[in-house]
Image (cartoon, rainbow, N blue to C red; front, top):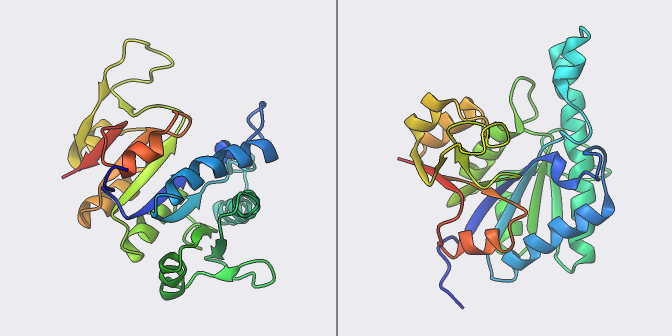
Length: 238
């Protein structure tokens, strides 16, 4: 077995990772597939914390387009992330991975409140921790929540798992000849206004020297290769 490059990671998943063929809702089969990929990494002895989005259930911009209050729209999104967290927890535990869900908005009947020390203790005991409800505050994305939580738990890298295999100079679905970047500095990523992560999250990682790796979740063995230090996707760092 190759030596591990990263012992503790924060994995940022989009809610779409759990969606069915129509791109909406929670598909139990997709949850099982994602759980299997996480288990592969967990079985190597890596500490894993997860922040998941809600794009498969709710997009706040749709509410805003109809005049919805921004804070209300964001609160709905936070609750949707908890639904995804519970679905992923169930899939992980059925795969034999002990998992805890913690939420930034208290809902003790279904999940623990997020407490930094408790989250770290779960990781030390070999449990996966899924962190729901974003930061608990409106106007902050789940990308920013992932960056914040990664630093709070002393993660060594933030892995942004997407449907594309890295950062491109243009949208590769529009321009198949778009150039892919293997490495970017934080400032380059900010200047490029990369669409895979918002500027607040990138700035937070830059200010705290936390590297980001953008990779394709669905690429076979991608997460395992990342924790072993192999070049995968795009690394954003100083």
